[in-house]
Amino acid sequence: MRSFLTGIPASLAGLLLCSIPALAADASLGPVNAERFGIWTLIPPVVAILLAFITRNVVLSLFIGVFSGAFMLESKGFDLYSGMVDGFLRLSGEILTSLADPWNAGIVLQVLAIGGLIALVSRMGGAKAIAEALARKARNAKSAQMSTFLMGIVIFFDDYANSLTVGPIMRPVTDKMKVSREKLAFIIDATAAPIAGMALISTWVAYEIGLIKDGFDAIGLQGNAYGTFVETLPFRFYNIFMLVFVVAGIWLLREFGPMLKAEQRARTTGKVLDDNAKPMVADEATDLEPDPDTPLSIWNAIIPIGVLIVAAFLGFYFNGYNAIMAGDNAALIASVKESPMGFASLRDCFGASDASVVLFQAALLAGIVAITMGVSRRIFTLEEALSTWVQGIKSLSITAVILLLAWSLSGMIKELGTARYLVTVLSDALPPFLLPSIIFILGSCISFATGTSYGTMGILMPLAIPLAWAITPEHNYLIMNIGAVLTGAIFGDHCSPISDTTILSSMGAACDHIDHTRTQLVYALTVGACAVLFGYLPAGLGLPVLLVLPLGIASVFIMTRLLGTRLPE
Figure 1 (cartoon, helix red, strand yellow):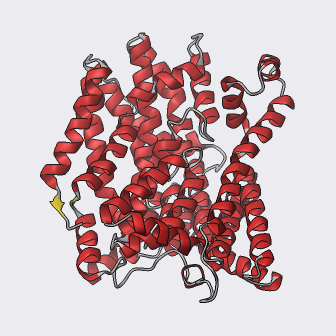
Figure 2 (spheres, rainbow, N blue to C red):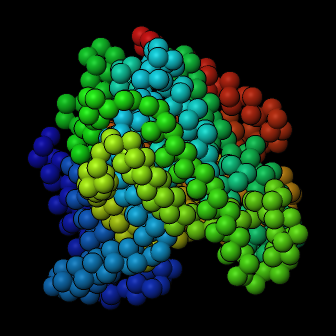
């Protein structure tokens, strides 16, 4: 078996060499590259995903995945020298480009700043105090998991903030109640993008509305893009069914697949991590215990985390407000000025904000507040506080590396035209009732291969809206297909080990990333099947959504009851 596994990368390399066209591809022309390379545009994501499962080393897998794409773009015929040397130069350039992007840089800084904040909160005893307070109410595994789920619902405005906040706070509680880190990471991941993608006010709204508006313009359809966004909510079958699935598993205390083994291990042996696991948070972050004489107070966590959340909300509003005022949309400017605190203005300002920069600023401010609190209460000196903050940053440096490589792979895939190739192959003439299901599956395939739900939405929406309108020019049918695009992108993102939100969920839970992906994959595929069989197919056949939703929700509970094995509380 070992020789077989080690032969897989070599076989892939052989296929790669045999498939390079005679002429080098122009990296700036994704559609041209998609036509030129054909099925071989799938090599970078396939290599990265396979190696991630085989080697259990995400950094190595992503690096080789990016390099394989660079090699394809730079090789001229069978010129291995150009492929190796120029490919390496292209790889390094792709990483630099990823870091130079203001959004990506903001995310990296946000991750590091929140790492420093969590370290300070832990050092002050705030996390331990909250854990002990919740532990007194969370008397068993069920209540600990439900508390994690509810906290994930509360932080609805951004999926990154959710992943980076819920895990570190709830981890001590779930550990004490013998809930596996795999299950904790799953709950975090399941309440991140599915919630943020549907929230009426979030960092996702403007992007989704913008895609809908552009699609409407392409077919000459006049409509309210935000109103259309709201109308798609009942058709977000995967998001809704996934949230129901989490509640069903917690309520019924039933698990199946790899998650069952992980939970049985945690309940029977107390090992929340597998013996061979490599948690994504280093010891510097998990071992920051307060001094024995430090008085424990939940306010040492509530105040800094509260500052993070309040500053994020205020930052979203004012950052978006300034962006709107500096723009050239006269109607939008007039609307915001007329009612600056109205719901529509709040929605528009949140949507126009630069979420990555705002969250970094909020995390930095919360860290300053935490340092001030700790020094003023003589929990530590200023020098110790800064050292603790830096220690927290260092513990998350590996996450920054992984994110940069994941973004580089996404950029390489875009240059190769991988997503366009998938769309071309899978978007042939279809019966009207099948189109929503096909769009959902196609979106999941692209999102899984590319690791980005945003990119998948941007690729599919301009294609799905004209296609759906051409097949059946009915409003409800169009809404259903738009919902399938927005939901399929999140489904594939949940399954992919190279997705940034999957990576951040592993990091927030201090879980082995491959263990999280492996255990979540079975659950995501199961809920995805329910979304198709009890969601998009019945809705595509004309069944009213008010009947489809109860049918799908009931199917999720029944499936959990039949497939799952009950665990002790």
